Figure (cartoon, rainbow, N blue to C red):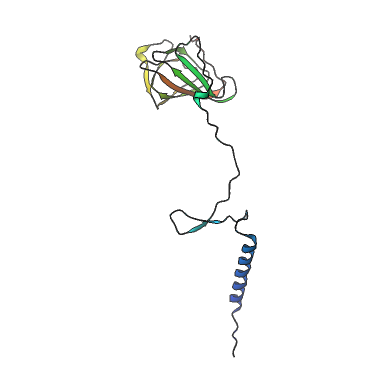
Length: 179
């Protein structure tokens, strides 16, 4: 009987393979440094799973119906609710407004830039120090416009009820004493 010697590199490769297989079997596939493989969608290829991301912040839904709606006494037909932030607290804010059909908010300014998104209805907006019905621009639902800081402007719910949202960075204010 004749024995043949295997080449040294074949023996070493077999030893490494056995060592890796044994170490993996002892450790198991669910160790933190090696997530279990997963099958790629629509494929027969098996890919290693991505490591789990640690928990982070979660989104907090703000439901407008549950907000504290107020009706300013000097602005008939207007309802307003601070959804995020306040007028005085430093930081971002979102102010939701409802203006009844025919409602007007006279000429006023804000100390900060305001981004306004019309959510429903058509809001008519004018710029200048005199409320001029002939100079208003219709802003339909889904549209966004910017009012720069200290820019005199006015709004009108000419054709029907309007709901819109203003956002910016506080502190902010509304000043009707425009000259």
